[in-house]
Length: 160
Image 1 (tube, rainbow, N blue to C red):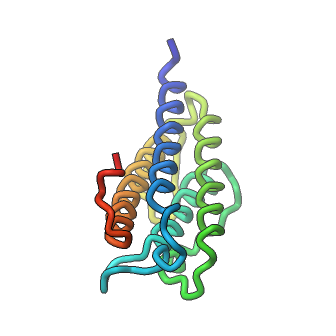
Image 2 (image 1 turned 135 degrees about the vertical axis):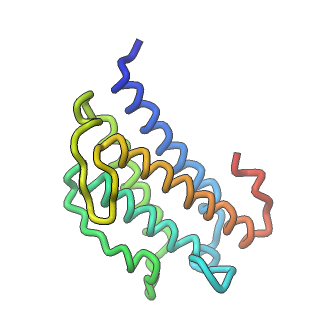
Image 3 (image 1 turned 90 degrees about the vertical axis):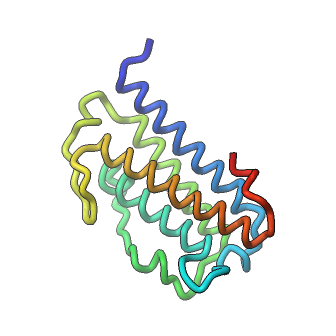
């Protein structure tokens, strides 16, 4: 029977892999135009939400725990005036997810309770920031599912 630390790592890693798969399920069919189009006067495009998730995970887990050296420009995640190609954005997202999963799998029992601090974060240990990032990713993938459905006219039944 795996110990608690191994179980936590296994479940978090699996969760982030599921989040990535769900995101791709909804984003891959979008055209580049749909990817960057916001169907509403408020909120964000799917593309900007993917940039935001990439920045969030690359900073809070990649840079702060995995020591990747990633430097975040959070405001640009939502205001990128010259959007990169959809394929480039998705490659960056996939790299961030691989980093997250690799970082999670490297955590020892004592790492989960290690002190954590980062700009704009209230979480005090690594377990808490992983949990927060997982919830944050779920939240925005929900937005992406809704927006993708609106942009393509498809129902959200594919989300499950």
